[in-house]
Image 1 (cartoon, rainbow, N blue to C red):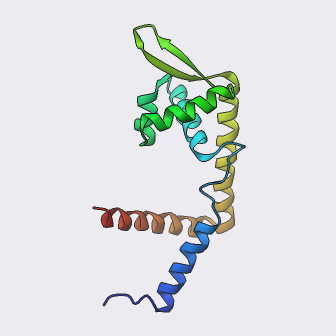
Image 2: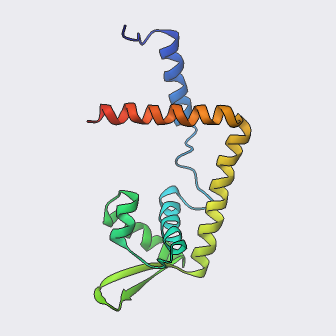
Length: 150
């Protein structure tokens, strides 16, 4: 039997999605950085933790699944703020590598801490069991929407 959009369940789900979207949680700044800046900082920092202190724009864009021009735009902003610097690859003079400055590393760690605190706060708020259920349900929601996009 197909669900009816007028059913209480459908209305409750629709309302929940609308409320969730209105919170704008995915657009909020993290320790002063917009989400896209945070993602780039965190990606480069993660690379640095794996002994890869410098990354090409193409590597960052592949990891974040966005276009290189998008990453370049974000890098330009981060560079102006003194958080990243560009260096020429000595092995390939055409390749530019991006690395965090000490200020950038500190910013990435601060932002990661704030991000982590938010999620740990959610787990504390919901409790372990409901957090597990939420994670499972959100994974199912993701799978559902992925199938719709095929």
